[in-house]
Image (cartoon, rainbow, N blue to C red; front, side):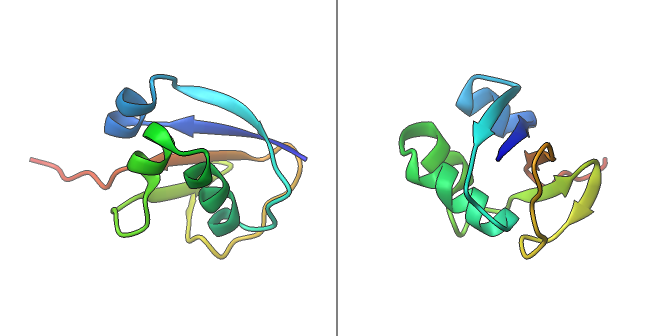
Length: 83
């Protein structure tokens, strides 16, 4: 299946693109994150386990256990604070 992956803030800056279409066999957001980490390089650094990364599925904040479906939009971004 294909999903649109969007990156925001520091993750977007590190990866160098705002969004990409990713072909995946992942059934959950956790599995998708692991696939992206396995690409190595900036994906691995930016999305590494242990790093604070927030996720949204189809513009709704969710945790990594949520199931993916074909055509989904997934967003990765660092936590932000107001000031």
